[in-house]
Length: 611
Image (cartoon, rainbow, N blue to C red; front, side, top):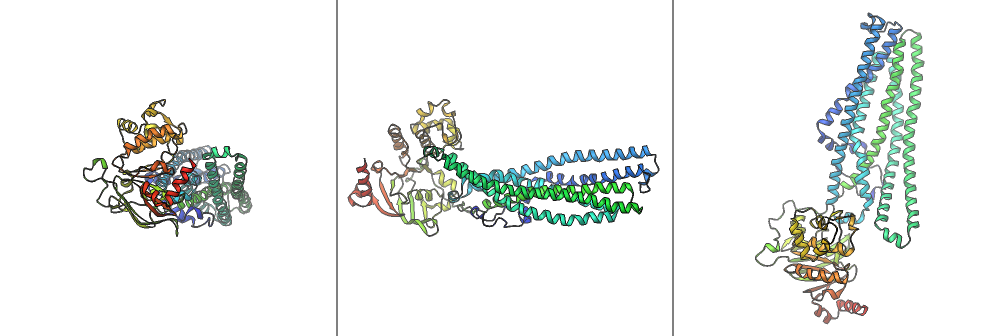
């Protein structure tokens, strides 16, 4: 699926591509359904023929009862009872055909739509998870959830129920029109000409519906975003008594959403009302012109009865067409919105021809130690020309323990993000063991870097799956990693030990317990490089002492980058890099930096005064 622009632009121009181009985006998914789509479309012709024949049969029955000359020849020579029996049998046959084919075709169409919806949702999810962190920094979670759920559901019917249904309705109208012209061309011409202004009116209302629907879905995204934000931050909401304030904000957004939904309802209702009035006018016109032709003996009473039925049936497909057109407009809106996401470029891609070199697992390497990190004149900006890192040039040697220190906003976390390739450097390059990280597959790079953040994120599931994170490890390996990081005793105290189910975000564990699992998660992967971003900040004194023992074992023969605001915890590292406004201003051991009496010494003295 090709896309259009970023989601931040969606309020600027709600109509960016015509419906045909949007429809073509779904064709590749429809082709994948193969035989199901062909069968469902093949059933449309017998359905249309059966629908067109029924008024003729009823008209013939009336002509037969009135003994009119326009009766079919094979009925004219039969008795009234025999002729009616034949017509009733034919009518029942068409009813059975329609019942069977409508059921089968309806099932196949829904199946096609659901299959397409599943494929689109999978592709969208795969694309979203491939996007760089930069995209998630600027996109509310609620907006993404709306795209992945309600928007995908809306467009799933565009090709299946909508497109196939419209093809069926158009085919039905053509068959009815051709049948009417064979029966009586003046009446047929009058009814067909009445379709033209009605169609134009319907298209106008549907365009207005489309605009209102786009705005309504945008307001729904805002509603979901605020809802998700409030649920996630409920502790802050209640602690700072923002319930009433947030309720008013939510009510405002909700009212805007309802206002836009009311517009869609108005335009949809206008279409239905227009068709109801036109169908009544069509029947009245048939009665008038048909009555005139009947008095002139150029039209039989049976044919007039058939035309009254045709007047209804000709506008029934148009009414269904209008209903499906409304659904299509909602679907096309969803296609536009999903295209916004699919158009987001995947900034960080694996190389097309990755280097033949591979990072070597430290435990499997018998030569020199691995885990060298080199930043070569690295510049980085989240926004163009607003650099948060400026010309960083340093080397961290294999097995070296290095701390990153500096005021808030100095760029410490940005260095970690660049090293893990969550972002790309604006200028310069980063090498691990002499290999440019852009020449390595992302999975290969991140397999050798273990990151423990300040707040460990847990998924819903059991304890062992939160340690393995989808990778295949034996239970013995999981227990060994837990033992190595001193978290085994805590896990074994849980109700079902390693099989204990954790709630979303691990809300049934304390912050310290979640952090302990994060250490086991890193240990089991045996990384060459270990990154600790305030990893012990959420631990109490007793737990921190326990983890410190595990850390000493975990850091053996590994390169380590440690971010710590408590400078007393990094006295024993090999080297400290001091950052200020994205620049490396000092480098050395704890004692060397204190002797320099620079920024590090100032920060250290301030912290010592505060203790």
